[in-house]
Image (cartoon, rainbow, N blue to C red; front, side, top):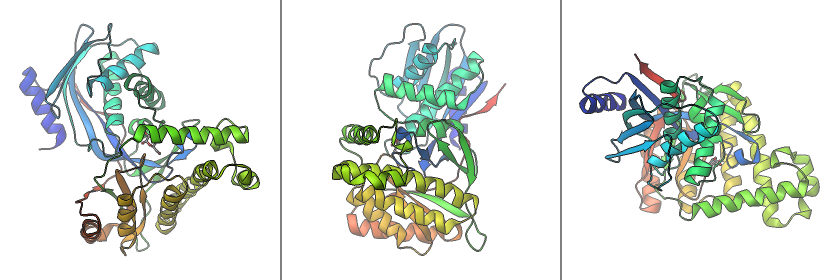
Length: 386
Ligand code: GLA
C-alpha cells in the first residue's frame, strides 16, 4: 500500500468516510549551494519522492485535530488560543497556524490523519515537509490563494520563531515550489526560482540522484550552525555589504589577507559556493553531467576544508562514492556535522554503485548506511479534493 493509500485508509477508519481532501509536501536534497541561503545567495535543491501526507476535512469551528500515524499521537489545538507547549511535532503545525494568522490570513479549523516517509533527523527536511503540508491544508480549507514563496517564508518564520530553529529559506522554498523531474535554482534574496532538469549521461541514459545517509547525526548542531552564520555576518560587515552574496570573488581576493584566517576561510566557502551553484545550474541546462559532478566534488572540498562542516563519516562516504566509476560527483548535503551525502550517478549503474558504496562505507566505519535513490518531485500539492 502506498503512503497516500495508507493515510486515506486510516482516515476512513477514524472518521467513517473517505477523506474529502488530501495534501502532501516533500522532503528535499540539496545538489549544491550549502550554507549560502542565509547569505542571500544561491541554492540548487530538488524535492524528493518522500513526503508528508495529510488527509483531512474542514471543521465549522476553530479547532485543529490531527492524528499522526508515525508518532501514534493526536494533537488538538484552537486557532484562537495557540500556545507553545514544546510538544514536539505538533508545534510545527501550531507554528504555521501562528505565522499565517500573524500575517493576516483568516484560518478555518480542520481534522485529519497524517503520516510521512521522509527520514526524520537525517537532514532531508522532514520538518519543512510538515510545515508546507500544514500550510497546504490551511490554504485548502480556508480558501486563500497558494503563493509558494510566501508560504515558504511563513513556514520559515514558524520554524525560526515558534519552533526556535534558526534555519534559512532553502528547505521551505523547495518543499513549497519543487518541480517533478527538475532541481530548482533559488535566488535566496529575491526568491526567484528557475527549474533545471537533471542532465543525461554521455550515452543519453538518465542520471540518478542517490542520497547516502551516514547514519551519524549532528550533535551540538544549533550552536555550530549559528556560529557559522555569525562568522558569515562578520565577513559581510568587513566588506561593508548586507550579505556575502554581494562580495565578488575579485573583491574577496583583493582584501582576503586583511581578514583573520578563520573568517577568510568561511567567506571563501560562501563566495565560491555561490559561483559553483550558478555554474552547476548552467551545467544542468547544458546537459553536462560531468561538469555538474565536478562542481559537486569541489563543493565538498570547500565544506571540508574551508567551512569545516563535514565529519569523518561524511568524508569516508563521499570518497567511497567518488571512487565508483558510475559516479559523476558527490558531496555532503544539508546542514553538515553528520547526516547525508548526495551523489550524481549513471542511471544504469545505480545498483552496482549502491552495493559497492555500502560495502566500502561499512568496512571503513563499521556503520551500516541507509541509501535512497530519489526522483525529483513536485512541491506541496493537493492530491485530491472533492
Ligand atoms: C539547513 C538549513 C538550511 C540551510 C542548510 C545549509 O538545512 O535548514 O536553511 O542553511 O542547512 O545549506
